[in-house]
Length: 559
Ligand code: TNX
Image (cartoon, rainbow, N blue to C red; front, side):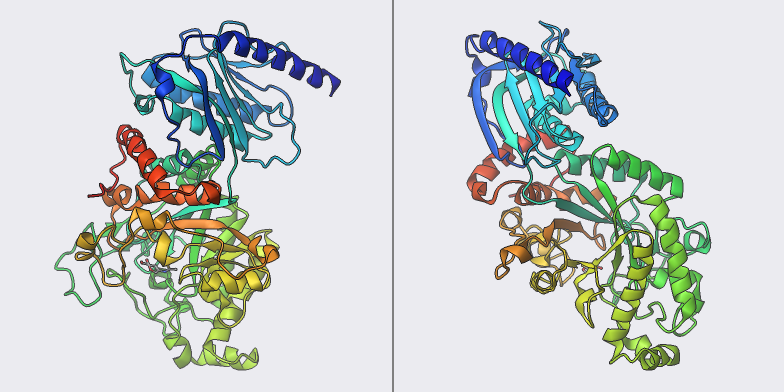
């Protein structure tokens, strides 16, 4: 402990020395720079001078304490990002008690910072002419400091091959930053459209770039089951494939397709482990969604005995909601789901498992003797209470595996499961109701968070009727904390998500649905509310577009 304090003092002394000498340099053009970082940091000011990456620059990481390996990984991640465009292979070195070697133009990643009151994602970034330091109490903060650093460098830093003729210069800044909300997520629907593994990783990379930390992966739905479950091989042999060509799903009242093409795909358990690891190294938690009791008919195609009618069924090849749902009166349904969830929790370390729960038509349950019998024996009032019974049983399974249940706001109907978290999508009513009952909430109302909706009126003409227009400017007004909650209840609002449903958004159209709206959402979830200013944001966005261009993001171009 004593030794650490000593070396801390020494480092600070060296840093201060460097600072004093460095700041004396003559100001240059780089000082005209503005800080255009998205999401906007909590506090940021430009100081004198600029730092330039040099062939001798090195990245130093804190090599002590339980987080040492993770800090080194963040340092290596930074070196890996810088290498292709700059052509510089910056060495990644342990910081050591003496601090960095003089004259190396060091970038220092350190957890030597007074820890009181600092959250795990908080960081301080100081850029001086002779060095850069990112200080954070924990590795996620260091990672976010690195993301900010990327956005301070010239946009060409995102090129994956060597760029000549660019000064790799950073304006001197003093930044203290932390997120407003802990849950900053985005849903990607890989059921209506299958997305490749590299594409999913890139999606996660872009989330992390905007300091988002939850990837909500929609993996099962009527038009396709996408997760390999070893105990039930027919889910990937049969439920993952449907009779359509690629592209937009047709509407339920359009004529049937005149094609014998088969479309689909699934993620093997190895693919999933690979994606989860990839996300973990970017401080993104993958929250899987396994839909029940509705939006589940693809599973019933393979295992019709889990339905009320016994089938037969076909994997749905239209938009819309199937009336065939898991039978709530059949014990086999619960055995199946428990088996599925047992494999799911092995694949996903996420503390939360999303069980869907939305849009479950009650028609089959009303006509099903087994479901009616269940209603009677359990003393339930109606089919809504039967849904609640269903979700509560599943919550018990998840709790026994040390996981928490999250579901769409329909899980409020008929009574919430005791420890459930609610994802509010039909406006913010569900958020208010859940928080008032002492339950945690993730907010993603259709009004501000549905990135499958059209950006403009012109676009709306060719989109499904239920989708209202959602411009980026409106996303930017999203307020996750609803009115009418006490301070205590407000604490239940964990954050929000931007949802990219894909009935009419195949992989090649995802970028232009998600961006730039996701940049606006990221700022509403990260930055202090007092800093919210559309004019300021949209001028930063103009600079940010140059970065997205280099990253190859095919964002929607506002007219
Ligand atoms: C509603 S949001 C759904 C999704 C659709 C989406 C299309 C939610 C819980 N359910 O199944 O894809 O609308 O906008």
